[in-house]
Length: 121
Image 1 (cartoon, helix red, strand yellow):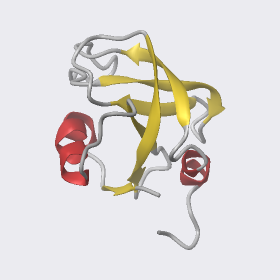
Image 2: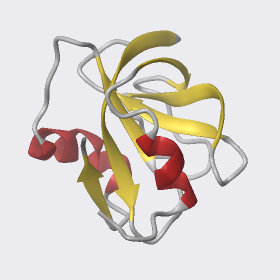
Image 3: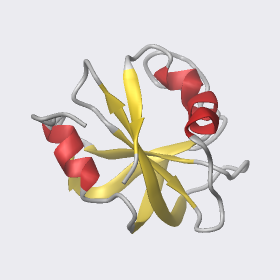
């Protein structure tokens, strides 16, 4: 890991391994408001946890193939963007575990434009 972590990574690391509630502003099947791609997973945020961009901390919720409004899960990884201070939590229910390769494949629809790495505990 980095010697001088980004502000976003410092915030995201606090949640690794913890249970959190996610609110989805971009549920599976919706289009990105600016770039037009379709969300292949539920994407949302952790309410009242501000990221460096001034918005709530972003999160992917993996392992569910239906549109959700809210869900609770475990933060199992972080998508750490290397050239953008906008890291994303990777959340799954307790019983779901994905390899780094499975996570990469699942979030590729959005993260393919960003140089990143998957971080775990």
